[in-house]
Image 1 (tube, rainbow, N blue to C red):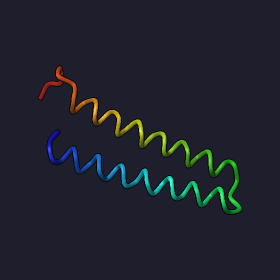
Image 2 (image 1 turned 180 degrees about the vertical axis):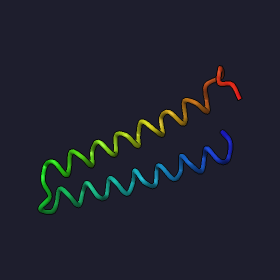
Image 3 (image 1 turned 60 degrees about the vertical axis):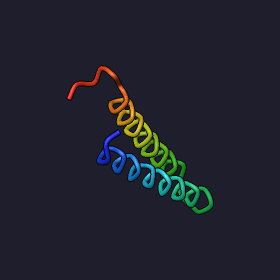
Length: 64
């Protein structure tokens, strides 16, 4: 894994951690179910992006 990809993945993990904290806050506050579901979707999108980055970087058939 090259340094740039590692930095991008580390940054995404930091964003995921922040999103988890945000979702915990939504649950303990007066937020709506819609707010929470939107937060979950954003978190899932981040997870999928990180998974794609790792798959691209570790795929032996990757060109470039």
